[in-house]
Image (cartoon, rainbow, N blue to C red; front, side):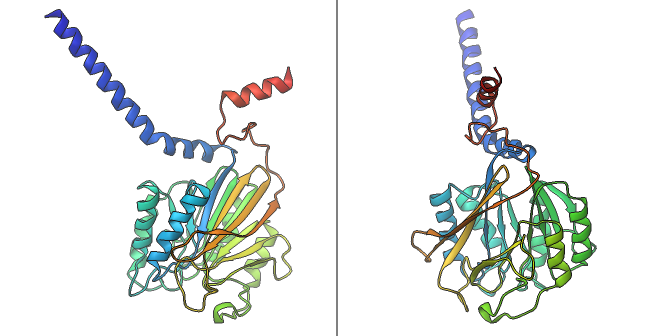
Length: 317
């Protein structure tokens, strides 16, 4: 009788350890993401734009993000335009989930093709799935304009079509304390005829980005890749991320951008390819940012732990 009782206790303990291990593995990625978000460890994130009507191509973009850089990073940004007769915004979220898991964190910028469509309801509902939001948007755009922070990075997401986004952005950037800042919006300020687009810049907006030392603005809309520092702003890159699915007036390649944050250095790498083929690097550059504290990840293995403490003690002693 005693042997049977001890055997049941032993089996119960073994099952408990198995379940505990399973839970630990399931939450490891999420906890790691939270740890990086709270500190100044190196991390990376990815950006795409304009996947509309190109679900097959976008799925390959997702595969190539996994193959080339190991995934989307702690979050992924898309710079607008998902809705069409053939695709809905949710289709691209599901593609990301299918490739990277149900916990993938996606920040979808509102594009002109979502404006006034039923997909706006989906995007507003999606706001409840977002982490790290520090400021919701202005009246009329509380869930489609917002800012979030991760590590030393502050990102302002702008819905150009609802609410007084410019006054909101002024206040958002005035209150920001993070040294590395990005802004996301759909329509470029300086398209210079790409994709037939030839609008002029919002001078107050562009000067604000210069004043607040915004590292880059991510946009799309033209379906053609380009980057530059324009309009007398020698600080902010405007990065038109091109197409991740849409083929009208495009430049013939699908793309994603890998953004790596490592202390005061921001590394940008653009990957490009076909609808079903392998991607390759077609552009890369770096930017140095002032006011960033040195990373505590001394051995640069992506985590801060006792190994980094050992390196620090070795330097001191």
